[in-house]
Length: 380
Ligand SMILES: NC(=O)c1ccc[n+]([C@@H]2O[C@H](COP(=O)([O-])OP(=O)(O)OC[C@H]3O[C@@H](n4cnc5c(N)ncnc54)[C@H](O)[C@@H]3O)[C@@H](O)[C@H]2O)c1
Ligand SMILES: C[C@@H](O)[C@H](N)C(=O)O
Image (cartoon, rainbow, N blue to C red):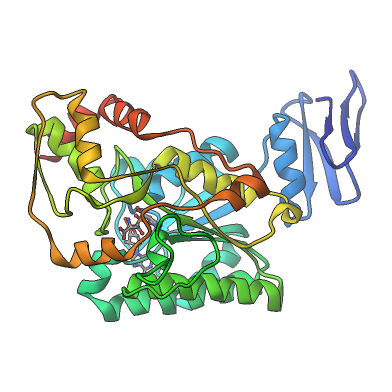
């Protein structure tokens, strides 16, 4: 292996018979592996930046990520995405639910309840975890239906996660949301820093998570990283009870029956994103050099549309598709308090965020997603 590791002025050499390393002061050991065809390099476990650079040069590396709340709409996709990048055994998926066979056999899975701090600590210590992705949460609509459980999972759970991550020097990712804004926030667009007075327990808990993470970063040096996601749209996983769920369900109904009853008004404009962009952004901000991050919580944006505009785009592919409206007052009130558009210029400037999917691409990709039609048929 030969090449310069950008930004670090270090080099790895492989010569025919003799292997030699020059890779900066933090390498603690190196050895031949794979029958002499490879070079195994051992780092201090926190040197993620150097490891990231090496992976760009095609080196395989083992460092372990723990992924909490991993069986939800976004979790399995994130685990697959990270496993492709870092190797199957480097990512441990966890949840309190029993995983289906194909997920259980696809890589390490363990039970982990974020409300049980002892169990969480044991998991982190026993598996020598370096990065932690905290996806466990009750979303906006289900949170309003059970405020006390939402308080426990979204607030007490977050405290446990932040404590363990701080104690063990982990890099911690916590997703926030458009739901962290409220009716008094600027809505078109909502910038990173502005009034945040959400009116849902979900939103309140996410503002709390943003502030706790940033406080621990300043006070104790916790490497906390947070993105405010828009509503996320995925083909192979179901949404978990949010206000933006309609934008996933519409595709299933369009394919299955050609009809969809929407629970938001036709003119409700919300920021949205295809899952592939969301997962890529998550990895990009986790890999971003510390010095490039001027903030610890960033908006990320891709597109913004109304149910009416989404239906029109689907109509181009399925001309017989029909949408009707039966408004759910709880979800509508939530949606009306959220931003219509997101200003993500800081993410674009600081660490080069750029979305790939706009509305036409999203609809084409969803409707042509491999196995989507079969999956819809099976789900029904
Ligand atoms: N999906 C979106 O559109 C969206 C948008 C913005 C932000 N987010 C955030 O991304 C994260 C993941 O969202 P999602 O859509 O996958 O959510 P989801 O509701 O689909 O999944 C949440 C998971 O958390 C697990 N969980 C609940 N209680 C737990 C506990 N005590 N311990 C461990 N796990 C527990 C659940 O079993 C579930 O698998 C959440 O934090 C959410 O707020 C999601
Ligand atoms: C927007 C996001 O946080 C989630 N999909 C919800 O609607 O609750």
